[in-house]
Length: 427
Image (cartoon, rainbow, N blue to C red; front, side, top):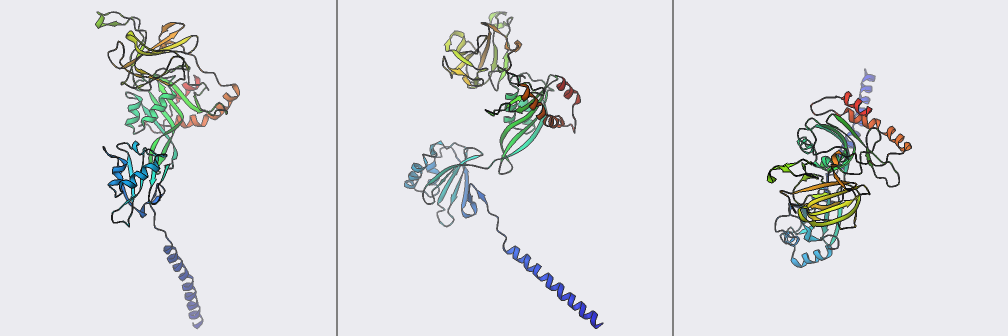
């Protein structure tokens, strides 16, 4: 019994000795825990009295600082030293700013002014000691996203109803600008897209990045689009369908990014104002608000930029020996005769000059000197991919196409439309 008691005592002592250091270790860990710091714009905000506000009507840089205990001699010095980096007169109403003020000063004097012209970029004017001005940006995190939808009225409203960005609609309209007339999408048309979205502060979206792949079904016809860099010299991506055909064409379908096709080319048009007599309309009208940018639909040289009669202010561009385009009723032109323009360049703005009942651009298309309907023309395509690069493309797209095909439409779980996929593969 005595031996058993001694053994139990030794075990208890040993156990106690083993447990005590663990307790000390835990206490030690707690003692070295660091308090959470609130870091933003490169400053520990806990060191300051932080005031956040937005620029209001009538606000100036000087008035904002004066309200925060900075005298005008100091304000003048700050403005002079900051102007080479940032013009303080460019503060915009509604944009946010942050003031870092001293905690040790009874006047709570401002020490730093931080202005945010957009969600990503910011301007720091630090005048705690000497005046230092710097431009900086918040770190951006890029995340891959997917989206899909079925059109009820138009692409923009469909994306908006799903809480998706207007920018995504713009990027999709640019990709399909040569193959789909987005002014004439139909109810029941549908789309899928794989794209990058940019975030700051880990959760605040600041816009759409590149679209990696897209699918659009228009009037029952499938259109795939895959981003691919064909050449290594310039490294500029383009979009190709599932058969390696470039989606880009020599001509855009519309001279506007946004607007509405209001009147088509019609040689038998009758107008009530003229007693329902036939008044041929040899252009295609696109309506949009005054000031909307008008784009060159293809590369070319400006041959006319003037004002004449019912055409009002207009621009005419020669694209090659066969094709020319003309853009009427501009508010103002943005190009001169002899100037070379690229597809998508802004050549003027929507107006109401000449004979017009409302703001629009009359887009006229000339082939071999004769006006024709651009929507009925087989317009030239860009050069096809060389065989070696085409092989590389066809090896690259299968996993991305599989990812696209697997995206479900809203309200549908895990559906892959095999009929549409098969139709696309056969096209």
